[in-house]
Every structure is written in C-alpha cells, then in structure tokens.
Length: 385
Image (cartoon, rainbow, N blue to C red; front, side, top):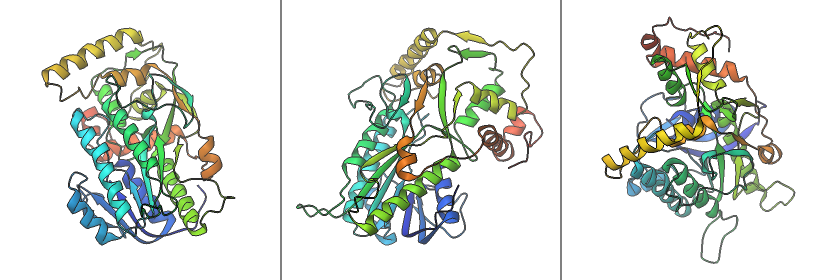
C-alpha cells in the first residue's frame, strides 16, 4: 500500500473498537497525520491504540452522543458501529443500524465542525440471492421486502440515508456543507475477527467438514481487513481534498457516492472454510469428497428452522446459525466490480488471501481460546507475515 502523506484535522471513528473499526483506527494512526484521532464505542477499554483518545458512547442514547460529538468537534466522522450480521434480534438491527445512523447524521448536520461523514456499508444490501459481478448501481433491498435478512435490509436503508444526506454546498434551508459517502464491504477476514473465522472453527470443532451446501463452485469476493481500512483512508483523503479545493470539476466525484471494496481476486466460497480449517491443523483426507446437499433442500430446511424460531420468539428473533442468509452465501455467487474505487479512489488492493487467513486463524488460536477447544498447539500456522 502506497503512502498517502494524508493530513487531517480531528477524526472520530464511531465503533472504532470493533473488528473493522479497530483496523480503520490503526490505519489512520499509522498512515496519516491527524490533529486528533478519537474512538467512540460502547466498550472502549479493550485493545486501545496508543495516541488515540477513547470515549464511551451509544447510538441509542442521542443526547449523550450529541454531547460527546460536540466536545470532540470532529471534522471527519467514520461510522463503523453495527450489530453483528449474526445478531438474532430483529429490533436491534433496526434500532442501531437505522435509528443510530439517523441520529448520527442529524448530529453531523448540526455540529458545525463536522464536514465529512463516511459510512461502513455492506455488499449484502444488493437485492437478490445471487450477486454476479454487480456494480454500485445494482438495486438494493427494498425496505418492504419481508423475506430479506434484517442485517442487509437495515444496512440498505442506512446506506441510502447517508448518500441522501450529502450536501456539497450550503442550501437555501440553511444546511451546511456535509460530504457523505459509503464503502460497501463483502465478507471481511483478518486478525480480531470474531465472526467468520470463529464460525469456520466451530464447524471444525463439531467435525462438520464432510458436508457442503451447493456444488462448491460458486465464486466469491472477499476482503482483508487491511484493504478495508486503507480504502477508508483513501476515501477520507479524497473527500478532504474536495473540501479544500471546492468544486474543482477536474477531480473525481466522491461525495454522495458508494464504492464496492474487495480484494480484487475471486475464490470459490468453499475455499475459505477449507483454508481456515487447514490453518488450524485440519488435514484434508485422501480422496476427500464431501457430501453435497442441493441448494433447494438446505434452503427449505433453513426456512423451516427460521419460521420455527421466529414463531417461538413471537416475531422478535431469528436463529444465529443455519439461516437462509447463510445458505444463500454458501450456495450462490457473490461477486462485485471495484473499477469505480480503482479509478476514483486510486484503490489497488494488496496482500495474499491464504497468508491473511493464516494470520487471522493464528490470532484466534492465540487470543480467543480456540487452540484449547481444537486441542492443537499454538500457533499451528506459519509465522511469516
């Protein structure tokens, strides 16, 4: 990754203690010069990065949130706070992702210092079960779609709110300048991942390596957390330049825009869990031929399971595993174009897929208790960085 020599004023990363948020914070701390760098989180006292100020805050408490933002006086806000995609509580997705984003946008419009608002969005906002080489203009999940998983559905609503809030010039209604943009991320892997890597390790722990959903040949786009973080630095730098240079039409338009961000190299979906298992010590049996279950069958099974769970919780929850969303991911293609990010952000992903997974698995083995659960020595993977 090339050095940007990026210089910013005050930067606030909301959700900066989470998986992606932590790495965004780390990237800004190491690769940019900020007059101040702050993190706002519900649990800010873990994995603190030297030189960063940490503040306790919650998107569900608007008044205290406004007070904190007013005290920090950030010029740039990066919004990375979100319930995990596996969260079973339907209302949590709506209240945090939709309501929390709306609250943070309202604060950003009225706190005079805030000029840039970047949202960490998701490629899951695209409509349909299969995503084949989609660009940013692909239709997103409709808010009336009752079958859509609440994570992607609420992300789609928040994504649209952020783009609609873009205000590149003062308006007749007295609205100040606020440049907004979204980065849409696919499955992100890396150190400190508490979702996808542990999910694969859980399947290994349960000896579920001999079953495969679909034909095993559906292509996927993945994203290392380092590439994800650097893309946010590129976008912030570009938006900051646009502020400084005003309406210079020779510069690429970034505000009011969304950008797909991936590693730029596609893999079969099932390569991912296999590499995770191998990094944790699993040895592929000779003549390995997993049982392949037809998509329609597992989708029907997941639908029945979801309906049972939904009814038994009085419409408040979905299961955390074996959901229709997981089956869609495992069975269908999910690939996205990143030409827009390459051209306008000068985004050029780097890194090795297998090496990145090795590091992520090693972190889980060393820090997250998985070495003991899997009864392997730690680390089981290469120490090469």
